[in-house]
Amino acid sequence: MSSQPMASRQINSAPVDRTAEGANRWLYVIVGFLISLVLGLLYAWSIFVIPLEKQFGWTRAQTSLAFTLSIIFFVVGMIAGGKHTDKKGPRVVVSIGSIVLAVGFFLASLTDSLIHLYISYGVLCGFGIGYANIAPMATAMRWFPDRRGFVSGILVMGFGLAAFVLGSTAGYIIIKVGWEWAFKLFAILSLVFCLLGAQFLKYPPVGWLPAGMQQAGPAGPARKAQDYDWREMFHTSTWWIWWTFHLVILTGGLMIIGHIVPFAVEGGVSTASAVFAMGVFSVCNGLGRLAVGLLWDKLGRNHTMTITGVVMLAGLLCLGLLVGPFGYAALLTAVVLIGAAFGGSVPIASSLIASSFGSKHFGTNYGIATTPLMVGAIIGPYLGGYIRTLTKSYEYAIFTSVALAVIGIITGIIIKDPKPKVEP
Image (cartoon, rainbow, N blue to C red; front, side):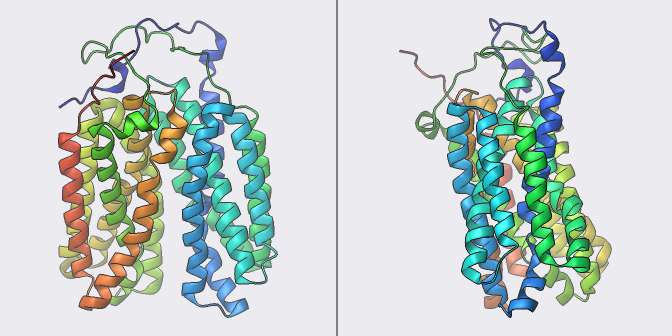
């Protein structure tokens, strides 16, 4: 089992940076964070649900389909954007994605039917966000081969905090002037931060490394990095073990996310307190992404994946066993742990794809790596609801998630580096 920190897995012969450009590489992280913060508005959907239902008389199932479509087209956009990022570069891809997103939000502000909403928010916004989402990460991965976990954690933290930071502002706007203006605000933010920010994104020269990174790290001798395309990646056990890890952590987490508020209310918690718990989850989802990214750089792949699975398991056990006797305090503790582990699975994904399968095909590979999200988003909330309906209790849904977390821990323990490719 290999768990070397990422700094030890570098190419000794690559050219080392001695320029001011390398010293300014943090610019790409700052720009990427701001872009990700706007793209994370995908998860601010819930603030529009009640206003739209009140105005048009739609059911929860009808409005929920808009979000389901946005997740599906988000994944489609990620795959397409990842492929085009490798070919066209980050500036072009983010520019196109931000324009599609701005158009989607603006058209959503004119919604007068479900079909209109599905196409504008579900298809255009979902696709635009997904299409633009990989390029900032791909840029950061190339500029920070020495701190992949940390910088990926920063970028995905922005995505995770969006609903809390910008969603709160949009919620205030909805109360004051209506949901239409909130969508228009999102369109403006897409143009100002994403389209403008895209013009600053670029890759370093091929083979570039930051100063001081030409030598192997302290954990051992350097392993020559190899680039795998998606077909080659599919033939490694590393990919499938990680895919299983990501799927079970996301599915278990989404199962709880989709039902935590009714679970809390049915347990005697007020609606306001249950909603506050979801706000705590959003914050921990964002902060967990940064924390796990730092863990990746310090402890390496196996330990980070295993710890993330253990934290998820602890949160789920707290939810299933301690909320009854200890009440709201135990609920908040469970939400903190589940949120941190759920968010932490995201920097694990980007760091593993970059470190195990190289940077040449990172965009395409990372786009394909979002497929567990599509599967988890479909079966996680549905499975939780189905089990609740069948058993009249959330207890079995929670312990199904516990079983999934145990699988996640096992995958973190057994995962290894992919076998070296046989060069022609």
